[in-house]
Image (cartoon, rainbow, N blue to C red; front, side, top):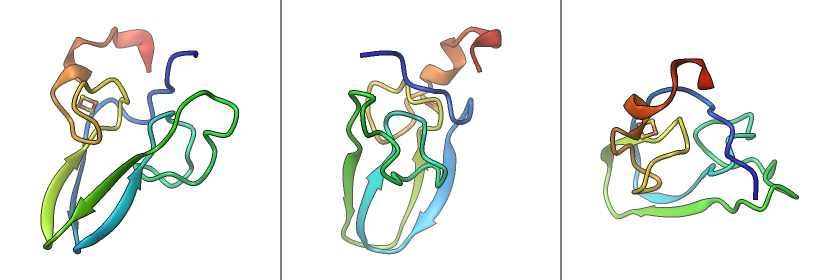
Amino acid sequence: MTDPVIAQNGPYPMELEAGEYWWCACGHSKTQPFCDGSHQGTGFNPVQMTLTEKSQVYLCGCKYTSTPPFCDGSHDLLEPDAD
Ligand code: FES
């Protein structure tokens, strides 16, 4: 498995309605931070997220979080030239 693509070197702050979402883990999706099926063949799979109520979330854009799909601050540790 290769490294994920850094879609954005920081989180996506979003207010989302209750529902089911699929967070892009590979970084190739054109509909960040959500999956569009581009992970085919990358070895990555999207991460399901279920919200039971309208919520403010910070979804990881760098794809290096250890708590997917949420930002854990790991983007601060990435090399400046990595994105
Ligand atoms: S955007 Fe990935 S850890 Fe913050």
